Length: 71
Image (cartoon, rainbow, N blue to C red; front, side):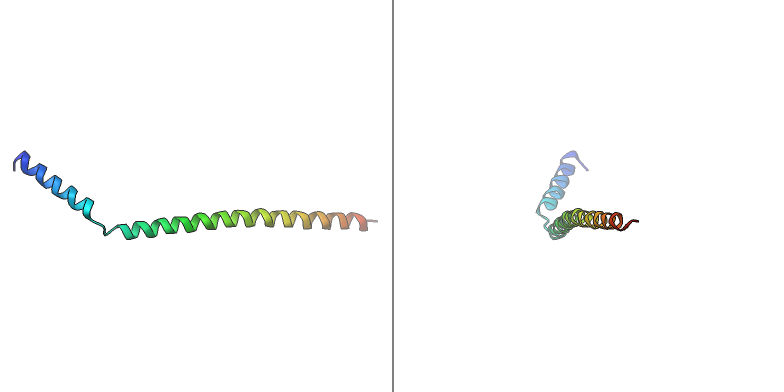
């Protein structure tokens, strides 16, 4: 095998790799899954902040009500 034939095989393999579109669909599905996960995390973070605020408000109201009822 000569150096020239090695370069031809390498170029041919590289060209086949660049022309291959078989993995493009899986990459696209992967990107969609990442976007969905990021959206879910953002939504859960917003929900958590609102939920925490709601529980804090409820806790403060109960504490104030208990103070008013204390003998």
